[in-house]
Length: 311
Ligand code: BDR
Ligand code: CA
Image 1 (cartoon, rainbow, N blue to C red):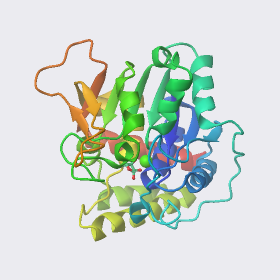
Image 2: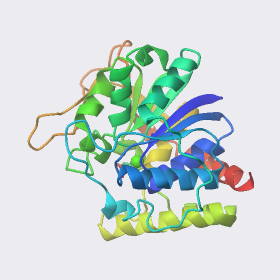
Image 3: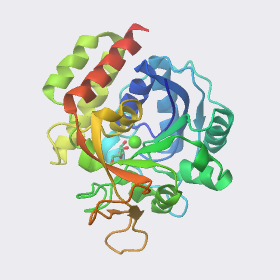
Image 4: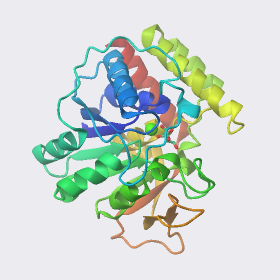
């Protein structure tokens, strides 16, 4: 199985990412760590514990950074609601929060496992991952790879050119992109192909029970957010795309390219700049996700939801 550390800020799509990671039979979920992003650290951690309990997560859950490296935290309450989960109730948590800081859990996990076996999957602002690199630089050569949800080549969402996770903490993102480890950027160009259509809603309803109730409740709120802001008719499940690639790389195509984060632009701070002028050298460690196999993706998600519901 693929050993994964999921660093998240649940968050409606993060919640589905947790269920995908827990429910996929080829994933060994080593830890779930949280970072302030979509909502405050306190809220996203409570959400991770609640969703994790429903999904049957047994891996440690640990809370990390409450704010970005340099700037004050900004949330996405307008998309994910005041609670971060669109007002949907999760069951009382049966998981006890790990007493360690998320950065410690990330470092410990990577350093304790066999070299080259752990995949980091950050789907929130990159603060915890950057802090982990600073704290224990040896994790860079020890992880298998980093598969992150964030960034955009064409159009942003937090600004015309910047995506939310990167825009929240551009300095952290630049540390992660430039560390030298393999990074796959699963950005908006890819994730906007993962739209939860009416057909997807119907397939989720077939799962039944509390898992379907929670997921449909969250996705309905998410759909309303996207519709009322005039952005998309069907909400894109950004974060599960990164988990999907980590476990099944054939679910999308990628293109190798150097990627840097704009840190100083007055209009472009937080933009991910990929150099697509020429085919990148074999040695280039970063790549951009391009084309999603939409059916394969939803089959992975639905299969995981069924397994979580049956467990
Ligand atoms: C990203 O921002 C967050 O609101 C989502 O959870 C996702 O990680 C999409 O831009
Ligand atoms: Ca997220």
